[in-house]
Every structure is written in structure tokens, then in C-alpha cells.
Length: 224
Image (cartoon, rainbow, N blue to C red; front, top):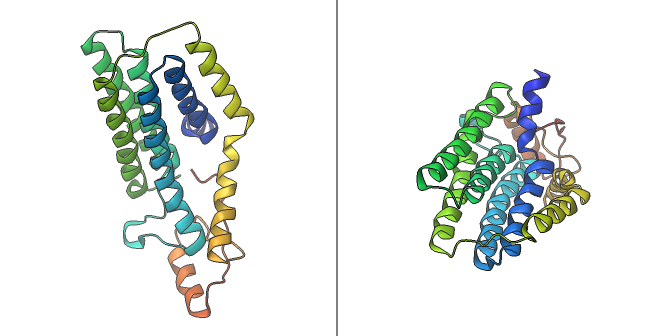
């Protein structure tokens, strides 16, 4: 179980966010300004959607009980957005079949990790599937745009810049973003405690609403 959980951590913020930053750094170093801008905007927009769904649940208990849906999976979104794009850029100079194969492989890895999230009960199927679709939409949209733009030119600064950006983001401890989402949710909702990542949260919401905005909840550690 522990080994599988370590594989799931491939999609953790501490891994995928620096890698997404390294992609942007590589594009900038290659003077692919438009591609870098599109990548940053698309990825940030996707992250915003995922973060909003988590804040809505943590602060107000919003979800879809009938579908067992609480919030989008950040892990599933990040891997399906970042891994295919990484392989796409690495194989830009290769033949078309090889590039396509790399993207398909990236999507396959994303789906496999999503299935593992469901198997290990970190998320339900209703939470993972839309997250994978969102991430795949970001990656496919970027690849379509990038294909129409001039091919990024490799230069001696591309790798150093990518590494510097990656290490810089790691130093900022991106994993702390999860804690900041809780703080934001509590601030906006006025609650003292967030709603817990529990399959009984619908009962908690029902118990809290009649008495006002305040209630009790317990956040389960390790939520993906």
C-alpha cells in the first residue's frame, strides 16, 4: 500500500508545480514567448478551477452527495496537464508518430494514476474523471496552440533556466498551498473549522445550516 501511495505522490503539488514551472522556463529560454504565456495561463486557469472546488467544499461543504463528489482531484488534474505536455515538448524534434506516441503515453500514465487514486480511496471516480478531463483539456489545448507556433529553438540556456525555475519553486514549498486553501476557505466562509474530507459530510452540512454559518468539521490529512 505504501509503495502505491508513493506512486500517487507523483501528482503532488511539490512535484508537478515545479515541473510546470520548468516547462515555462524552458519555453522562455527558447524564446517561445507566446507558447510560454499560453502554458502559464492555461495551467493557472486549471489550477484555479481545482482550487475553487476545494475551497467551496472546505468552507461551505458544497458537493454532490448523490455522486459522492466533494472536490476535484489536484493530483489527477496536474498529472494529466503536465506529463503529456512534458513529453510533447521533449519530442518536438522527433517524427510525428513518435510525438503522438509520447502524448498517448503521457495520457495513459495520467489515467493509470487516476485509477490508482480511486483504488486507494483517495478520491471517488466522480472526482477523478472530471479532473483528468480538465487536465487533458489544458494539455491538448496547449499542444494545439504550440503546434501552430514556431518550434522552440533549443539553446544552451534552456536547461539551466528550467533547472533554476524548478529549484526556485521547490524552495518556495508549493506543498504549503494546500494549507493556504484551508485558510482561504475559513476566511471567506467565516467558519472556525473546515468541513472534513469524509463520506458523511452531507450529514454535517445538514446539521450546520439551520444554526447559521458556523459548525464543526475535521479535515482528513493526506487528502489528494
